[in-house]
Image 1 (cartoon, rainbow, N blue to C red):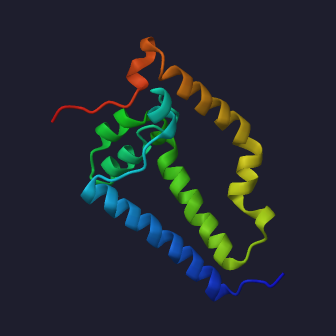
Image 2 (image 1 turned 45 degrees about the vertical axis):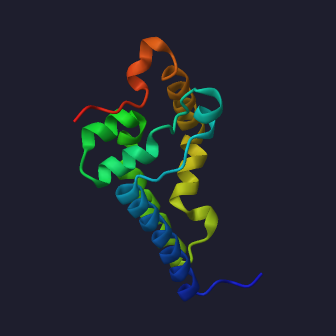
Length: 139
């Protein structure tokens, strides 16, 4: 298989960044977003419900509202962003896939994170833990 050149890898990373920025722009200015299929069909919140609105609120500087949309995002936002940026850097540099930090981290922490997400998704649908459900705060 042909090896990608460094210029091609840079182009791919900037293409992905452009798509992310465009999506962020559309969500902030036009309040467009992707609907949750689980919530649409069942009425149950998944672990990611409110995530898009939460990111939009972060971009607008509304941190508490972002927290209320999806509390699980908050502990992961800064380390996750830094990890994704470092992974992009590793990709551009041509680091072998198995040596990416994000791959090594997912091998070690993937199952515990998946359990936390499933537990969070389950609890936010129980009436007693309704504070975990996405909430729109009054202005």
